[in-house]
Image (cartoon, rainbow, N blue to C red; front, top):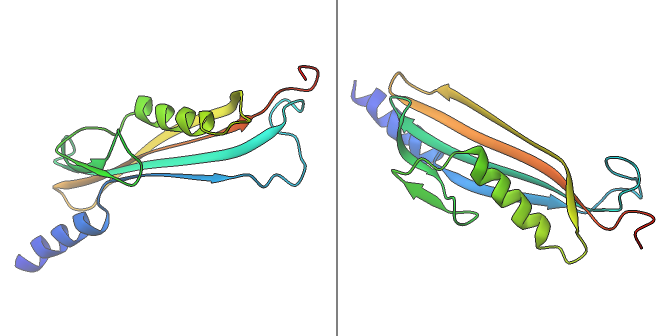
Length: 133
């Protein structure tokens, strides 16, 4: 029994909540989306967290900052992911809009008491369209 409890705590520590954003600006001179858009960057984000009994948040990704965690706060929401993605898209001086914004959620139980959840999202930030120059 002690080993199972220690394993549960180790799993929570290893799979602790975090928010991360990754970007790429390598498009091989290809168009994105409708074909007229000039791609600036592709943005991918993920928020993770652990919940006790599937509904009590223990450690989740921060809704305020990337690479941070929140304790006992339910931050794993699609709204928060969309805010992170659009803020990252806005941070590029050449981007004027986003295309292909998609989000998804998932979860699984590590042990009968602990549930691991995540929210993922991605989009493409694009510059001015041809004809708008």
